[in-house]
Amino acid sequence: MPSLLIMRVTSLAFFLLLNSLPAADFQTDVLPIFQNKCYKCHGNGETKGDMSLEPGQIRRFISKQGPIVPGDSNAQILRMIREEPGVEAMPRQGGPLNEKQIAVITQWVVEGAKLGEGTPYALTQKSVLLSGTWTNTEGKRIEADLLGVEDEKALLRIKGKVHQVPLKSLSEESQAKIQEAIEQPSQPKEEK
Image 1 (cartoon, rainbow, N blue to C red):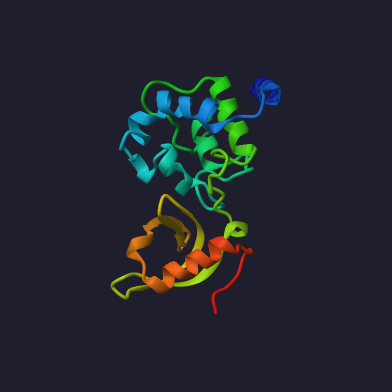
Image 2: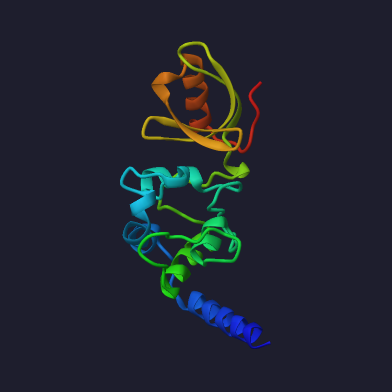
């Protein structure tokens, strides 16, 4: 009985802390925590468990099927940093995150895991610009969802995973379809 009471008091304290924080910003609030506590394994070129928390890479892990599910207070990354039973606790090195760090990351995820203005990170079904077949310059065809374009790379979701594909590696026809989808977005649409 006493442990149940302790869990409820701890949950209430965490809830109050979470609600007392201003909106969480990725660049100023969340990224510094990742850099200080997580980059030993998930940054600076390290991708333990095939996961990077660096700004240019993290968007691949933000999706309905990924470890960072926008709006989900029970997302895998949150269960890991809260050190829940049956879930591999993170970070493995350097000690656990404190309550405020956990609250900031939780708030960021619950508020939609936004990376900043103009960042096409929301990799949910609603963000699909065009579903269809894409061809590379060598003629290889793949079925994928176009989620957006960033830094001359198409964000293509293939079998649930998001890949950054250089536009120049795609056929002229595929590049033209991407350009048209970006200029006239309608969500979601199927290629004919």
